[in-house]
Image (tube, rainbow, N blue to C red; front, side):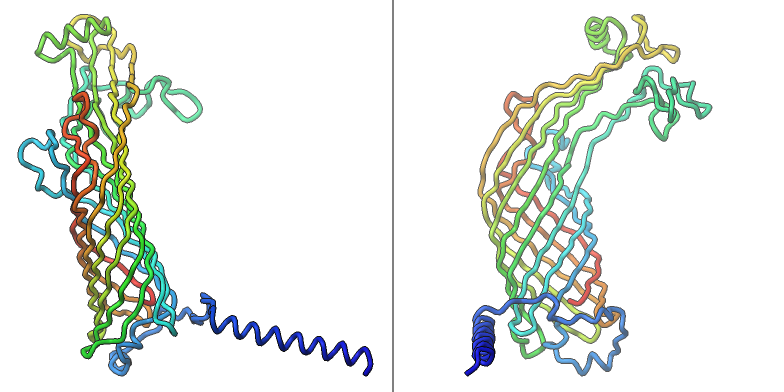
Length: 400
């Protein structure tokens, strides 16, 4: 046998062995290729009622990549033991808004997949008292020009002496927080699709992890002016700054909750002609690592005279801003809650649907809201509180 023929046989044998090994490996360790779904990107292809009537529920539940977006309008509950609620207002819900994004895929062969979800919702409710400044109008700006304009873009050489932006007079807002909280949630879940029930409903169990971030802001403000009829305040400001003044003091606290939880639940959907009714239920529990810091912030506007009252002709001599060093605290708590959703979608095209729904997220325990009450700087702090969000949603889905 020639060397050339022997070499050819050896190479052929190696290729055959590699092919068999590769096939054997793929049989036991299949690799999910994202492009095996063969998307044709005809998302807006029309679909008719007759087509839907002939499609079984198992086939109407799409496979492959999918994405959803929802605009959220969720009301949030107020913190407990909040002295600034002005009475028994803890049961009130304040309006908030946010977004929900979901991306995932469902394998066509194994009826299993993955889901990533991000939810954010912010609530901001304050008690506001507006105070006019002593020299209530900056008359130099009434003709549309800036006071003490500096090149090159008309920036103020002395910031803080202008009329408030969008107004033709000068004022300061005294704000007390009633319910100011930012909520972010990130989820990664493994999903399965069960066989349809007798009447066409499909159940999709899920198990995963959820990471929450909640930041609560608490502020208690106090405004004092030399024009106040209380002579004690006037004399204190005069002695402190050597002239008539206005002083805004804010005692503030910021608490952050970082919670990592395990969650399980299910998604149930049923197709009714062009409509799709969907319900989600998820329970989560885990640990919450809490941190809080508080400090005091002061701004004083000092005028150029020492005889009360502050009048329109008085000029601002200086602006003094001071801030104390923050006081930090930490804590850990057990975290428990659940998430309920319900949607009704209408199928517009082959892959696009619009939907409206309801969502409720209830964190039963384990939240820190209101800051740290040590020292009495900020009243009402408590690291074992709850938070309820409930409201309505509007959104779009692609291939789900």
